[in-house]
Image (cartoon, rainbow, N blue to C red; front, side, top):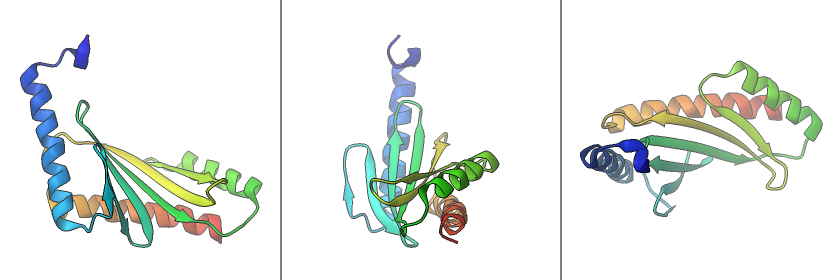
Length: 137
């Protein structure tokens, strides 16, 4: 059952949609690095990884920011609370890297305009800021 029994035309459509969205983002943001599946940049004081899934099709946004040293047990409880009350994405603390991260996944059903992408990006930043500020207050 390769590619979930998708027709060749549908597989190609999804691949083209991911490629077009990637090009659109690259034309509106300064990309610092990239690989075959992701773009890496900075936005609003966050390091951001933007990944694309061609098969599903998905766009995954990951935000990361260094955390000051605080009580990790308290941070874990706050992170759990953030995730219990959030619906858009998930919050995490990586103790080894000493950073906070926020992640969201969106279906990429149709072409994503720059305006719509930045609307989504800014809403994600708002949620990431909410989590980061709660953990660092």
